[in-house]
Length: 278
Image 1 (cartoon, rainbow, N blue to C red):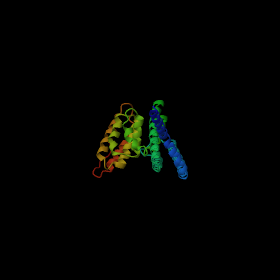
Image 2 (cartoon, rainbow, N blue to C red):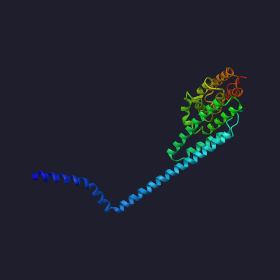
Image 3 (cartoon, helix red, strand yellow):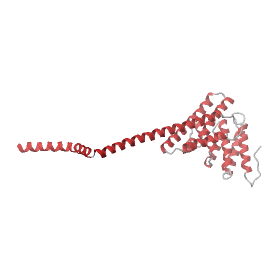
Image 4 (tube, one colour):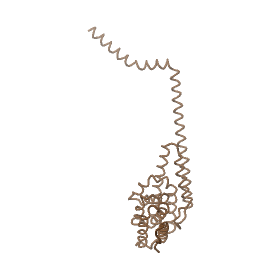
């Protein structure tokens, strides 16, 4: 019995030592190496403060860029003009380049990604604004002017939003989001979307017909030489559809842009003397 009791006591002592050994060891290390531990703790504090400062700086940079984008977008809306020609206003094209430069100049990858996602969200909101404007205002100059202002703001974001072109173009439920894709192609034509632009004339409304015509004109100017046959087919088809539009009189502005684009395309071809249909 005595041996059993002694063995039990020994076991309890062993457990106690096992529990205490690490705290005691840590205490000994702290006491004997307190200078080194102090320096390590100081370094950790400095590192934490630096990380916080960097984070605050990054947030401030993002805010500054966001404010700059806000100004560019608002300026474009304030200077939006009724569509009189297929020319992209220089102010809007320059604003689009400035916005892209602002985002590209951010050295921090997460901040760039945050800003790019912000551009995506802005475009989605502008697409929704186009739809609500068209639905809530009566047809006429005032509504067209309001929708042109939306397009002007889209253009300032168009270059920065190009990574989302595929997503926007594939939207089936929202004509406003598809308009975002068309506006991106006005600023940055892409041969992979020429046929997609042609399809707009079987699915969209007259306002988007016109914006698509502007995108096709830019495609003729920027990539027409390499894609002459495809553009010729799309432009002739679009002209035919607009001229036979059954829901009202054909939009003369849209027809003028399409025919001008076709004439420009033919003029660039040294092997033909064809002219646009009258």
